[in-house]
Length: 108
Image (cartoon, rainbow, N blue to C red):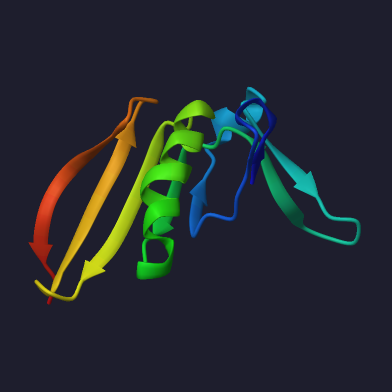
């Protein structure tokens, strides 16, 4: 995924682009030479990053800022907290800064 306005090049763990986003050219699908699509450019509706110990700073600080600059409507972070045996999630809503959306919740 790339966004030239935000100087962003990333491979998020998940991405969603709505039909209306594609129709309005807010996000574009780049076709491969042989088949299928290789890349999204622009601002998809949502990106997901699964946070690990090695990606904590990148996912929670660097990419948070870049996705905000790219005007990505929702930015979801998910991670497993071993100390509490809980899954946490956070997201950015409507281009505003990342904020907690749901507190830690037990996972089966």
